Image (cartoon, rainbow, N blue to C red; front, side, top):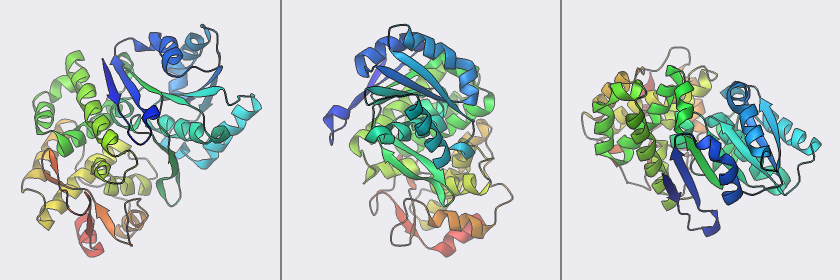
Length: 363
């Protein structure tokens, strides 16, 4: 199955997302078709390297090109300028030229770092996304947003750099621990909440099969979420308008991630963020009553908590939110649903919220 991401600002940047079982074996042919290069830097983290690093290097190099593995320590706390700098220096030391390409092999952290590396290495080289987690397959590998975290906040340094192709091999999901599977399902819930009530209902009815990694159920999750994300990205390539709806749950979620020093996984934080932001929408009168409760029930089926963890003070959470990319004119802004499957469109898809109301929400 192939889903096209048609980009209009730069037509030559449009790309395919290939979804299926056993696609890793087809990587050399896909590279030759979509991203030919003399040499490939395979960038991954210390966890994924043990599972697939050598296999990917051998497959890529078996058809002639040079391939070399570049690994960094796993964890969101390593998505930093220092990691980006180290990878850049190591590629330079290995004499990768402008005729090279980067392969991002891993979850969301790897995709963000490797994409930013490709965007900036020798002023930009092409790259390919090979996501190994559900979250990366259905969300972070699509859309060309790359970057690193800094003390002021998450993903505040980065670039838009579209991949040449995304290869989502569903077989790789069989090795995912339950906590990582659930982390990806938070984004699936978000996709249903923002764009497709029928998909949200499917997640409600088939949650047990999805958690059991039932093949057809999990494939439907990947396919539909990819379709939703690809359609939004194609409409708004650089987050100037409707693409802001993808940030539902992320304003509060990113603050929870940052203040926990990333001990709370991205998906877990987004799940909590969606609950609080839906409650905020209801309190403001822009979200239908009962929306937050329905989101809570589904998230609980997927084994998420719906209340923010102890630890961070309200002041700390607000401080991180002030640095959020959606802040305009000093106002904290939120993307909130009108109802399940439909987002509130007022004021360019986000609404400004008085800081006092935000404080009352997260207290």
